[in-house]
Every structure is written in C-alpha cells, then in structure tokens.
Amino acid sequence: MRLMDLYRLAIQEGMAADPRKGPELDRLLERTGKTYDGLQESEREMFDADSLWNPYADSRIVHGDPDTEVRSVMWGIDINTPELLLADRLRERGRRIDAVIGHHPRGRAGASLHQMVHVQENMMESWGVPITAAECIVGPRAWEVMCATHSGNHMQAGDAAALLDIPLMCLHQPADLLAQRFMVSYLQEAAPERIGDLIDALLRLPEYRSMARECNPPEIFVGDRNRRVGEIAVKFAGGTAAPKEMYEHLARAGIGTVVCMHVPQSHIEEARKNHVNLVVASHMASDSLGTNLVADRFDANGIEIIPCSGFIRVRRN
Image (tube, rainbow, N blue to C red):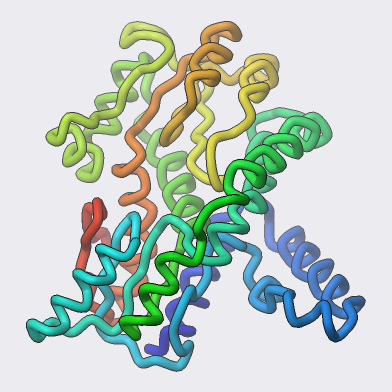
C-alpha cells in the first residue's frame, strides 16, 4: 500500500469511532472547505490542505512522498531523532523499514494539537453535560493548550526524517478514539461494581498487564477499591487532559467514575471535591491499545509492524 493509503485508512477508522457522528463531521469538513474557498491566494499557501478531508489536525504525514510504497513500518509511541536514527541503523543492517509512524504528534500536527481539544465537547455531551456548558469550559482549555505548545520545536523530528530520507507519519487522535470506543464497550460488558473490579478488568487486557509488570499499573487516584463505580466516563480522546471544571459538571450529570490516561494534579483535587472516583489507566498502555487497533487494520493489509519506543504490540485480528 502507499503511505497515503495507510494515512487515509487510519483517518477513516478514527472517524468511525468519533463521538461526533457522521453528519456533524461532514458539516465540519464543509465549513473548512468554505473557509478555504474564501481565502486569498497568498493565504492558501499557509492553509493545511489535509484539513479539507481529515478532521484530525494532530495526525499527518510529517515527511515523505505520499506515493511511497509501504510494506514494513517501525511504529512507536514517541518518535524523535533517536528513533529515526535507530530506523536508519536497522536499515543499514538489512531490516526493511519503509516508513516510521509515531503516536504523539510531530511537525504541524504537534503545533495543531489544541484543535483536537474541542472533541471533548461532544464527549462531555455523551456523558450528560449540556453541549453549551461543555463548550464554555472546553474553549478556554483549548486556548491553554495552544499557549503551552506554541513555543515547541515542532519541526525537530521532521527535519531528522528529511535528512535521513525516512518517511514519517503520526497518528494520534484516530488511535485515541479507537481506544476510547474499545474501552467503553469493554467496561460495559465487564460491568464492574466496585473500583477494584474495574482495576481487575483493566489488568485482564494485555497492554495493561504488560505495563503493570513494569511498575506502571492502573492506579486509583481518587477513591479506593471498595467504592462503588456508578456510571463510568472513559476519557481517552480529545488531544490531552480535559479542563478541570469538567468534574463538577460530570457529578451533576450522574457520573461516578472517570477512567483516563493521565491527569494533572488539579484534576485530582477537583475530582475529590466533587466526589468523583478517578482511575488513571496508564498512559503508555492506553496509547498502545489504540495504536494496536490501528495497527491491526494495517496488518490486515499485509503491512509488517516493528514496534518500538514504548509501543506494546498486541494483535486482535
């Protein structure tokens, strides 16, 4: 398959798992097209043309010819210059690596991460928070993320890939959306009554068992094993951590437990104040879960996957 074919496949998989339903995504892309049509020619030079069909600004081909034929990829959670040098060294030793894929965004995808925070508005609506309230608290959080990431050296990995002539792609939001959909379905079927049951259910998944063996298991940040779970909100997608104000709204909506990948200290305090249990499932395990679900689709199309940089490869197809 071509690199572009793999890129489009990943985006399609993400859209199928997106809490924004098909018509809403169609309207989003339509609005993007109208914005593009209204630009001057000089402005179009700076426009991200992929956004006309790809609603995930944090997932892009960072470097490389989209028509590159790909049969084998090296895939990791974080791809930086050392990982690209590793790929180059493996190539020298005879290993076929046609492209490198990272989970966390690099290049213009990293600079655009804040745009993905708005996905959390629809996630909160699905948990019972009015969409208008969700927009009011997510908007400032998106601005906060933009300010925090604005000064980053986003081109570092892309520049290294260009110098080594290695195609590089990052697939962030699609993998997180697939992980979130999987976890929601999995926990609904597991139906944990107590938080201890929820932890045990997570540890039945191989990605989480693997990280537990590395002293990074799912942890209860607020609550204890004997607390009732109540209604569960799984927060894996949306770019990064949600606004801390979310917990007050979730408590009002009847959510008893939040399961997430990672949280800052402020979330622990807000969850405790609003009597919401908080389970942090393990960042690398959760990223590996979503990446595996994308990788399985690539694998089904004959692509060899070489895991690296924290990616725990588990096949489910």
